[in-house]
Image (cartoon, rainbow, N blue to C red; front, side, top):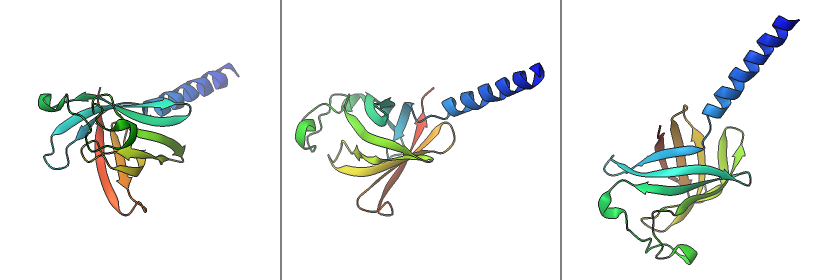
Amino acid sequence: MRKIILVASVLCFAVVTTVRSQSVVGKWKTIDDETGKPKSIVEVYEKSGKIYGKIVDILDPQKKDKLCTECTGDEKNKPVLGMVIVKGLQKDAEEFNGGSITDPVTGKKYKCFITLEGKDKLKVRGYIGFALIGRTQYWHRVK
């Protein structure tokens, strides 16, 4: 009986560890669509059961002090560094959706969903209307 309990405990620990390591929460490196070069680091975090993402580093030194001049509302003319660009995503099976993502270059907001593609690759899809009409980026986990 003790062996069964021990084996069950080890298996549960292994499952919990695997699930934790496959979380969208963490720091992710974004890649510029046009140049293919690393662009920024976004910290994805959970707050009140929803997922958010904030720009915590801009990798191009010339753009570190850039303002979101094209943004509207409260974000207009605010620094891009520190801006929360992913807002209000909720878990739905294997993806997080129902929120939005802001492109700090254009100031445009899009509906958004994210999914893990392996433990160190995050698929980020921004779209207008239907998910078929939009753009996908792949972010890479920062270790």
